[in-house]
Image (cartoon, rainbow, N blue to C red):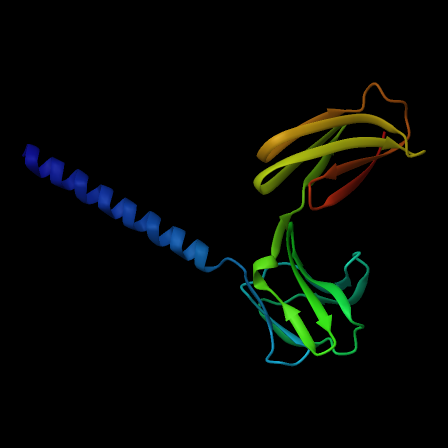
Length: 202
């Protein structure tokens, strides 16, 4: 009888483990898939996206971040070839934003072709802001060990608060505006790669 109970428990554990593994696999298989590639020897970039949810913004921008071409996608799958032959010789960024996730693929338009190195592709996660009374909460998943700088500026652009968060992968913070006079403020969150802004009125 004891051996029977042990075997039943082991069998139940195997079933639970297998069910969990299948569920995890199903979840991963439904994650958004984004592929960005150079098309042959031409000055063309191909993008294929699957399992999308929500609004997706596809942008080709200058190296300084100025948008040159932009499309908004509201469908589960998307595929398109972008002809960049008309762009001037120089460096550009192909950007895909889906919710809090952003992919950036640098590329160069040269005299004789297109240079696109997949190893230079970068992924970012934007912070989530929330105002609760006189408190401003934010969460940021950096995805890697990094240092985050936070400052709050008044309507005149003067810094009224600063914070430096070192060596974190994920951070959650709450900042109180209780001691500040009424008015408009901007919270700026900076990582080594990106800056994010959030406006709040007290």
